[in-house]
Every structure is written in structure tokens, then in C-alpha cells.
Length: 480
Image 1 (cartoon, rainbow, N blue to C red):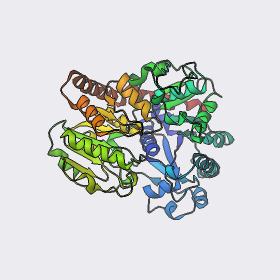
Image 2: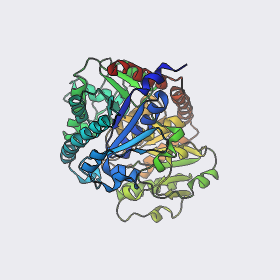
Image 3: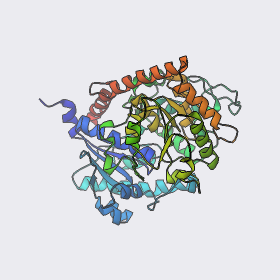
Image 4: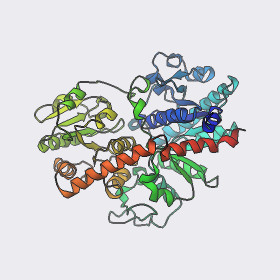
């Protein structure tokens, strides 16, 4: 007997659009695989040409120009065999680091080049007999809804951050009374439905000064406001953020996460990491460490630490006396800071790259010192590893607040006036999480608890898997 969800899913062709940032590509990639496997839908992930070339260096797209690419629609299957990839152009075909371009310039180029090449891509699919039936778009890509509207294709936002952050933006743009004129005051308390009390420093960093990224977020909510109870796929699981989801009835927030594709993460499109550098011998090193003794330190793919922050981390880790595995990437550390700086003394191992999901799953890892990006936070939750959070920008401060105040699975290290977390403050955080005190034991207990709940949500009959199938089933009428 054919499962009706599978039968329905086979008729769909989802096109997922994301930007050339690993923090967006990874959750898009994992959800694409889940969609394809759970529903047997056809799923294509389109990323900007630069990232497509990194993923598929031998492909036709690697050699072509963006207009040729849109015209010829070369499809590359990923290693899982269930998702296809096709490029579009964001106007930065040779690559870009967000530090080096004004937000408004980036957003304008992304929209003008992206709209044109995405439309060409969709038309190509139609002429090849693979018409797109739904476009899923991530943050900053609201212009994709205009492309889809012109082509009479339904669109759904895939919110890759937690529901908590989505709700904060919603209330902010709606002018909620929690955001008072005193919100710049550090002592101000912002109270929003379903959330713990927030201070201004707990809010997403782009809310502190008007800029093109904040405008792009406002565009998301203007678009969603055109529909009654718009559907939004959210990279979270219901149990984790039930108070927030229940307190935001204006939207149909569909919790389909945490979108951490553990089964296939390790072999994703050749590697887990677009910018993989060096595998090293870190797994063998971890095997030799005592259970839950190692401090794992990593700050994602976009964070660039200052020289002083690297030095404070170095001093703090060595002073802790604990073994540590520190990922110090070439593209995220200051000029002149070499790996050898942190190899003198201490009980640590420093690598330029590692498979984060494998490390977090290792029994030797007892704590994760992280910037608190949502992908890293989700991976820690699924692996049951407590966190010491050093948030840098975007939504990371909000994530840190939720980890500490709402979920009880870590602590936020407080930065000084210059934004640097000093060695002593890092040591305090490590003691809280790894120590033998009552709070440490409670944090570890809650981390184990949330790990079980997250894995239950992701199981075949779990809440997130059911929500994903029901979402696809609910779209069936739109393509009949």
C-alpha cells in the first residue's frame, strides 16, 4: 500500500533558495534531505555560484558564467543521492566575506542578480518537464517571493533560526509595547509573550542600528503579513520552544527541527564543511581523553576573533587545566596569529578544521565554548553537550539567553566594555558547566534531557517528522 504522504510528495518539486553562507547552506541542505527522504518529493537546492563551485568543483557550473548557468541548468546530485543542486547568481561570483562589503550594496546586488537568475532557473525546470511547485526561501531572500508570484508558484519561508528570534522580530516590527523608548538603557527589561525577560544586549545585534539587514528582516514580516496565518517552517522542535510558538498565533509556525541531519552530515557533498582545511588526528586524540573532560572550542564559519580575544581564550583555556580541542580556522583568526601561538603549554590540541558533529558526539567532550550560532547550538542540544556561550553578532546573544534562562543547558560568558571575554570570565563559565557544584549537575542533567527530547522529535514518528509530512500533505491542494 502506498503511503499517501509519499504519493503526494512525489508530485512536488521543492526549490530551496539560500545564500552563500555555510550557516544558511547547512540547515537548507539538511532540510532538503529530510524533505526528500520523508516525502519522496523532488528537491533542488540552489545556492550562489561561488558556493556551488566549492561544493562541485568539477561541475559544468564551475566553469560557466552565471547567465550560462541559469540557461543550461546543470544539476549536481549530492552524495546522499536524494537532493539535486543548481546555482543562481548573487552578483558575487568570485565569493565575498560579509566584513568586506556594505550591507546595502550586498542586498541590492543579491536582489537584482538573484531575481533574474532564479527566474531563469525556474523557467528552465518547467521547460525540462520538472516544474517547481513550491519555493522555500531562507532569511534575506524575500525577493524570491516576487519571482515566485510572477511565475504563480507558492512560497514558504524557512526560518533557520529559533522561534524565539522570529518572535522578537515580529513584535519589534509590530511596535510591541515591550520595546520602550528606554530600550537603549542597559537596565531596561523587555517582556515579550512566551520569552524570559530580555535586556537590550539579549536582542539580535542588527536591531541596535538601522541597516540593510534589518530592512531585509522587516521585508520578511511585510511579506508574511500579506497572508492570514502564513506558514513558516522553523528550525526548532516544538517541545523546546512551545511557550514561544503557542504565544505567536499570528503565524503557523511549523517546527521541523532541529535540522541537524546526523545520518548524512558527515558525508555531505564531499565534506561537512564548505571550507574544509585540515582533518588532523583529533578523533584519536579525543579517544585518549577521559569521559566528559574535554572543552571543545569553535566559533563557526563567519566569526572573526580579534587578537586580544584569541589571547584571552588561550590564557583562559590553559589556566583551566582541562584538556581542550580548539578549532582556529585560517579564515577566522587575526593576521599574524598562528596555530603555534596556542600550542606552547597547556593540555590542548589546536586544529584548523574538524567535523563538529563527530566531536560533539564524542564521549570525551564535556563542554562546548561557542559563539552560539543556531546551527552550533542545535548540534550541541542534539548531542547533549552543555555550553559556555560567547555570542558575537546577529541572533547569537538571544540564543545565549535562551540556553541559559529558558533551557538551562549552559551559561553566557559576559564580555567587557570592549566586547572581549577575558580569561577569568571564561574560567568562571567552565567551572559552572564542568564543576561539581549543584548548578553544574543541573546543567548536565538538563542537557541530557533535551538531547533525548530532540532525538525523539526527529524520530520517524516524532513531532518534527510528523509536522514535515503534514506540511507537504497540506500543499497537495495547491498543485492539483
